[in-house]
Length: 454
Image (cartoon, rainbow, N blue to C red):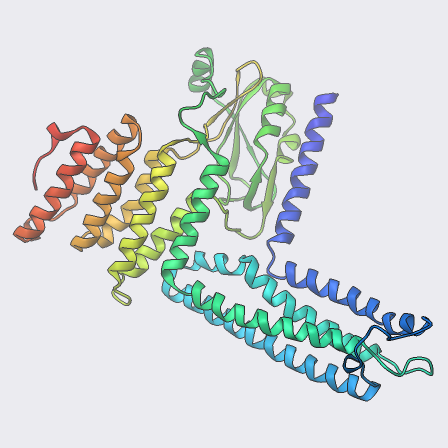
């Protein structure tokens, strides 16, 4: 009973967490929040002047130049409202220009970086909040027999000064963001932070021991039962811990056949089950998957690497032809893979408390990351000697500080790269230059005896 309650609670928390994450990742979340605060602030401001008039000596401590009559107050508020609306429009136009630049010159995936940038959302939120505050004061401010002077318009003036300062900051912010070198740096920094926050060091001890050998025969020889979903869509989230608990309760082994962000149809097998299948209630396992109609980008390590690879390929295209940007991306890919090689990658096998295998969920290993980063660059960019040289240099960087296993992986991948080099098209100096890079890599990886000049 306790296990069932924990499972139900876990599913509920997963759905709530997904909903909160989806709301907070919305572009309008911060502007809407600032707008709501502006409404509350505007409503509260209407009581300031009547409150001051209830005092024995109203406005004693308020400088006279901060007070206005009703006509001047309306003039000030209408001017501020129009100005802030114009600034908001300019901000929207600037954002659209940046998004168009990201889409046409960098990668469609990089648009998310600017849209989800908190500084951009805060600037837009301040402008929206300032406009709402001013327009509401203009609508509700009234002159009465007891209140003929107003201090509230001075608050709107102060707000407008803050908006001007923020607007100057926004122009500088956009001019920095639109630079490709800054975009590459931000993607690299975010990806490395994601690696540090989600993965542990490879040298640490881990409790994810392999399952016992008796389960191997069961998986390889017994035909599994496959489960499909009624609803088609894209997988948004998988509750692995909940699946482990439910599989432990049913005494079965589960293999997840699809990954997050992949599309599943009505008849697509999503789960394979080994064990006492008669105990399985299919509906229970569907609760551990969240499926949506749209393919949402998953902010993970692979997504960050994909952005850098796409920027590299776009820079190497004939329309842009910017090898320096491609080299910058390759160097940063090397930094990320260097960090990734020193970490313990997520396991594909999840055990219960008794170390019995319960869930199989294939995860990419270091070889997969390395191949996905460079196989397209090899195809489209290695005709350029500078790009080829930068890639070998990145391999050397990865191998220098990582384990023997990573060194061997790098050397084997380098041999794959060398297979695709059209040696007969290389000039003598180019051939010597590349040979020096490969020889240095062979020394670093400990495979100098396998080195053969081009």
